[in-house]
Length: 262
Image (tube, rainbow, N blue to C red; front, top):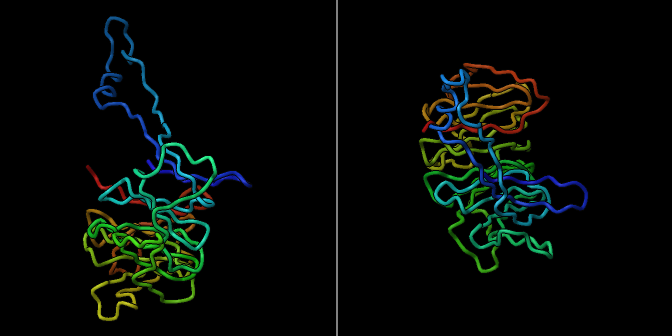
């Protein structure tokens, strides 16, 4: 598990790698069986889940979002409160944070002019990373490039309007497609193979207000979830109206993710 802190005041912030202890499936089954001799359930004591921090890496400012590379979970990218995106190779950092409080990412990705939250690794093209921002831009990097000064400019920048792009996500079935949502209330589908790659291939109004996040369905390539502040819409890409609308009791939600069934 990867975590990011939002510390108060002058306290330091960290990218945290955590280990979660989960009970084995056989243990759960045994815990539900009845002990005939004692006429009670739970013949063994139930173990509580445990989260243990195994690595803390000093981070400049709050961590808006953190994502690991699917092909190499030791590589983690973070959205910061400044204009850069950081990439850390956790194998190159000690388990305890440095005493001097210095933040030393292995790559500093440049292209944005404001902070943001959107961050998505490609599961098809190793090292390809998308980011969205309050500057209304989407940036694409190939992190396989290793510059000497550890600073890497975006290889492509996408922009459709002047509104904040809240989130961006790669498609789960096609390596050339990705989607974005933002304060223009719209869902945009981008195609890297398109002749006019600077414009989205498809745009639909997704919400009556700002859209905060999106996630493609890993099973159905046409199904996508789009999150508003307190509503989640499930829709087919070619439909103008959502299939399912889910309400929640929270005042604000900022992210959704799909879980691929095992």
